[in-house]
Amino acid sequence: MLSLPPANLLVTSVGCALSWTSPTLPKMESGETDIPASSSEQSWIGSLTPLGAVFSPFLAGYAADRWGRKTTLLATACPVIVGWVLIACAEPARSIPLIYVGRIIHGLCVGVAFTVLPMYCGEIAEDKVRGALGSLLQIMISIGLLSQYVVGPYVSYLVLTIFSTVVPFLFVVAMWFVPESPYQLIMARKNQQALESLQWLRGTKAVNEELAVIEENVRDMLANKATPRDLIATKATITALYISIGLVSLQQLTGINAILFYCQTIFETSGSSLDSSVATIIIGTVMLLASTLTPFVVDSLGRRILLLISAGGMAVSLAALGTFFHLQNNHSDTSSIGWLPVVSLVVYIIVYSPGFGSLPWAVMGELFTPNVKSMASSVSASICWFFAFLITKFFSTISEELGSDYAIWIFGIFAVVAFVLVFFLLPETKGKSLQEIQAILGG
Image (cartoon, rainbow, N blue to C red; front, side, top):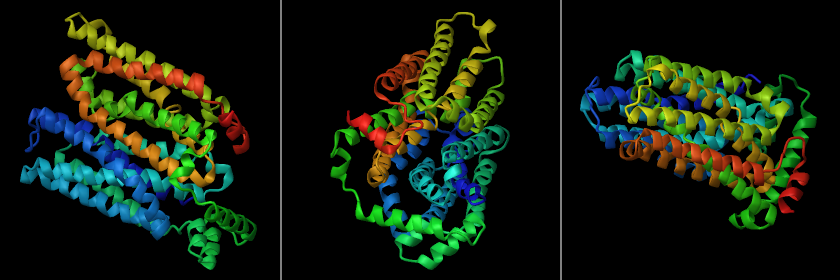
């Protein structure tokens, strides 16, 4: 599927926006840039991107249906570039508000990307590769994250911002030659274009049978359009909704965005024996490798087991990291365990990536019937990014007021809550039909 990597370049750009703060905020705090920022300003810089992402999923779904998946994705690249230009201009202007505006714009684009891109990729992919789409999304985000960790510490504020601007340009160029989703074209009654699109995507003229299936699916979807009331119409849907909201909320409450946004700061605070920039690169590399291996693990172990391993592993690694900070804050000698912060976060990332990193969204897609799936995804995405905002905004404040040890331990407590939720409430969905899953949820 040659069209999938170009489309996913947009989330690589999202990964750059999410992790830009990790190498940049320490420079702003130390005075290495011409635009120093206070602790409060840094927390806003970190948190405004997830705050922007709270509001755009609902608008993104409408735009994708009204103007098309491809058009919406291409249009999203433009404000991403504008956001980077504003952030670049902030240093010579010495204007923190310019960074704020750029970060909010990036947040709005994050919400659109996470809503429309899975929709587009799911509609153009063949059945045999559709299961790996969530992993490809995580891989491309990880590439964006790692690029900031590798480049950011060693270049200036301006150079890193210019480097980050290149990715959305590459996305526009690559995506320009990829066709619109056949589903979208059928919905727009452009059947001939849908045929040509499907032929391009499959690399063959023999697509009439698949096109007929798509036409039937679109008719069913349009005939069973959902309303907000349908999200709470049955016990099965209500159960699916609170499980999905619980999973995506705990994905954030276990601390992933605080760690990604403030990764370099965490290592600098720990006084680890390893250079903070190098340690951050190790974390980004581990996340990329773990994301690459995820499809193979998911197919062999199943969703429920992986989520339990993920939650338990995060709880243990966060407990260890919090203990390190506790010893350090009480002036104990931690020189002999200077390796512990790096090892703890490596373990955290290894268990997070195949579990709570990608599976909450995959499980959500399996719990809901097709007519309410899009609406449920928008609600869950907004709640997910709201918690991401709270975590990134108040992580530094909690660390200053209570100490880094208690801030990390709070994430660990939520990891335990995640384990309990999965153990008692989530059924295994691997290998089950939609009807079987609905029967279990409705029971």
